[in-house]
Amino acid sequence: MRTVPFSTILNEAVQLSGLDRDAITDKTFRAFRDLCSNRLAEIWRREQWPFLIAYRNVTSGREVYQYETTAGSPLVTFTTLYQTFQYADLYDTGSQVLVTVDTTPAYKNSGAPLIQGSFPFTAYTSQAITLDVGVNQASTNVYFIGGGEEAGFLYTANDNSFPIRLPSDCETALAVLTDDPRASTRAVEVPFYLESLRTPLVGNQFSTLYDYAILKQSIDCWLEYRVACPLLTGDAYSSSTVYSPGVQSYYNGHFYVSNYNGSGVAPSESGNTANWTRINIPELFRAFLVRAILSDYLRTESQFEQAAAAEMEAQTAYDRAVDFVLRQQQQTTKLNMVHTY
Image 1 (cartoon, helix red, strand yellow):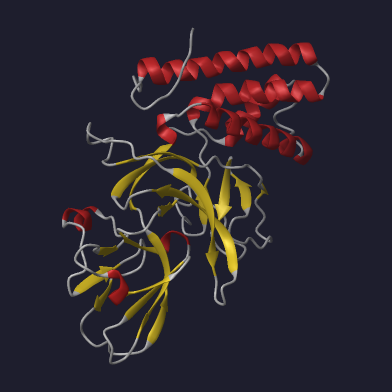
Image 2 (image 1 turned 60 degrees about the horizontal axis):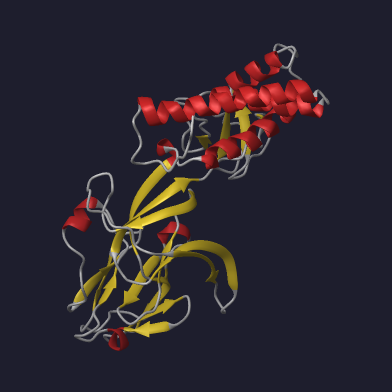
């Protein structure tokens, strides 16, 4: 995806507004930043732009946040959001159990493992854990699974619902499919519904809400989703400011999100990727954003006729962006767009 610096959009919008682009005050910067953030969210969500669609191979099932082993016993206890399962309760010839969320190509191609004496319990970013069921455990311990996308999943054929935790960069789930639609024409959509569930903490206290796609079957599938639209909230970077994770700064024409606690480490185009993540604005949205920001600014100045004219220009720029994707890039299979022009 080609991107455009926010400074380019800012300078063009300020110039068209009749202001001095070489003498932008902090007040003007914040005003145009907020206007851009609002309009970016508008165009971001108006269509299923192919460059904002992502795919992830996932497994639907019960989320596990801890498991326990007992020394001298083959028993392994899994604790899920709603109930506790023991291996002896789960396994029988008619209802096998799959415990995995490892969806790397090499692992996926090896086939989904079923419990047959031993099995892997893996998570997105955690190492594989092999529990030898049927063999006495070496120690008594309680193992906590990491939060976020590092959580594991457990499911059985007798469960009524099988959740998929949506990725942290997911704004909305668009489809759940049986195969990768980019590589197969046989991908079939699987029915699902969205729900927010709370993650339990120690002592049965519930905490953060997470979004899930809930399926009625346990399958290895592909999640199609739209990447979340970023909010633009940062002010100019200062070497003396202590930045915490999630706080934005504006530096050399771009907005960056901090990934660390500290100060004195400036964002960089070529480095410091561990400390800062750049927010990318699609270049295709540039013309629309400039004229939409101009329209909103003129409206705040009570110049309603000029604002209406700028809004029409923004709509024209939007239609051209759609035309570029549909006609020139020929992305008709990935879009759900209806236009009559």
